[in-house]
Image 1 (tube, rainbow, N blue to C red):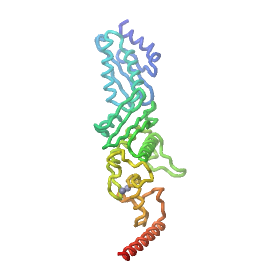
Image 2: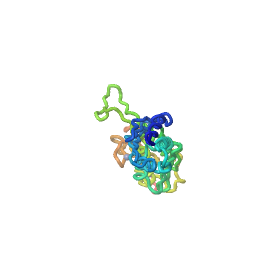
Image 3: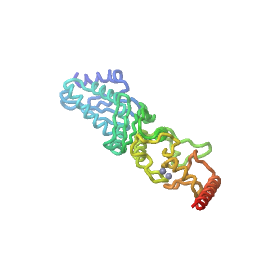
Image 4: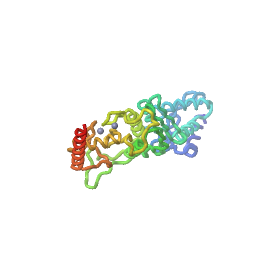
Length: 333
Ligand SMILES: [Zn+2]
Ligand SMILES: [Zn+2]
C-alpha cells in the first residue's frame, strides 16, 4: 500500500475520534474534506489535496466557511502551510486538522474578526487602544477624547452572535450620570441585536418586521455607540448658556447631581447645566410644552414635569414680583 493510501486509512479510522467536532465528508486520494464545528458560527470546511511529490512537500489546504471571515481563513491557510512545512516527509493531514481545531478553540474571537477589523479601521484613532484577550474571549477597549476616557471589557460569548456581547469593568472620568446612561444603552443595543422587538397583543408589526427575526452581531454596534458618545460629550455645549458643558479638566467634573453645574442629558440627547435647564423650563413660551432649542423635540424630564398652566402662573407670578422689585428700586433712586 502506498503512503497516501496508508494515511487515508489512518484518517478514516481516527479523525472523528481523536479530533472533537470533526466530520469526515470525503477521504479519497483526490480530495479529503473535513468539517470542523465548534458552534454554529465557528464552523468551517477543510479541503485537502496531495501534491505530486507528497509528503516531500506540503499538502494543499483550502478553507471554506459561510460564517467565518474570508480574510481570517486566508491568514489561517498560510499558517497551515507553515505548520505542514515543519513535518515534511511525514503524514500531515491529522496534525493539520488538530492544529485547526485547536486554533478555533484557542481563538474564540475568530467569530468577530471582521467586526474587530472594521472597529480598528473606522472607529478608533491612534489615541485609543484595543486589545484582544483570546484566553478570556474579551475585547478590551480604551477610547480617549480630549482629556476624557472610557475603558470597557467586552466579553464575547462562545455562542456569539446568537448571544450578545456584555460590557464589564467599565472605568471612566465622565460624570457618573453619563456612565450610567452609556452602560444602560450598550446593554439595550446588544439586547436588540439578539431579541426580536415585542409587539402588543392584537397589534400587527410593520411589514418590514414580519420576516422571522435574525440575531445580528452586537460587538460593532455597541462599540460604535460607545465611541460616538465619548467623541461627542467633551465638546458639547449647554443648549441654554452655550458654554461647553463638561470642564476641560475632568478632575473638575461636577458629581453632585443637584449642583447648578451638574450636566443633564435630556430625552433627545442634548445637554444642559442643571441650573440652565431649570431657568429654561421656567421661561415662556410654554405653549405646546417646552422644546429643546437645538432639535425642537419635546423636553421630557421627570424632574421638571410641570403642567403648562402651572408654568404660566409661575411665570406671571415671577414677572409680577420682578415688577414690584423694579418699582421699589425706582422709588429708592
Ligand atoms: Zn448652561
Ligand atoms: Zn435636542
